Amino acid sequence: MFRQGRPIVPDFAFDELLYHRISVPGEVGTKPTGVDVRCPDFSVNRSRFSEPGDVLHPAYFHLGVAQFPAGSVKHEIKTDRIYDFRVVHAPDEDNYAHSEVRIYKDGAWKTELKTPTTVKSIFRQRIAEAMTICIAADEGPSKRESTPY
Image (tube, rainbow, N blue to C red):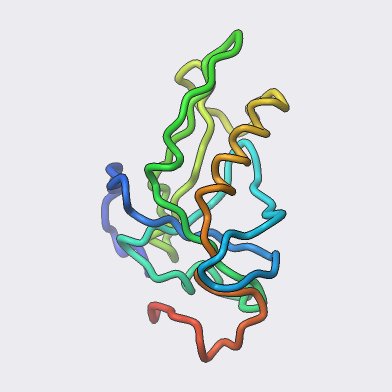
């Protein structure tokens, strides 16, 4: 999982899975209900470089994991501005798979982006509809898949 000098890989396959921690209960293979998706941006791990359980390191083993395809993120909303959603590979030194789902306003991204409530709602709904639980919350650690550090 460590970066170890590896470069950013900007391309995501449409069907590449993204893994996100969730706190809501649910059965594996079902859609989570009431999932809390941060907006405008939130962290995920990409399946190209990790397993679902990796997002639970180092101390989130009581949570679950939902997966969704990277292709479900790409979307554009036009209001008086243009908001588009993208997945960006943003590796940490201790987590090469780390990526972020971001909202861009008129083609620009910034950490303190003011996003209208309607855009946030559409963004959250789109992501929630694409998610499927792959690790249930409060499942025993022995059942979790994980890539060794």
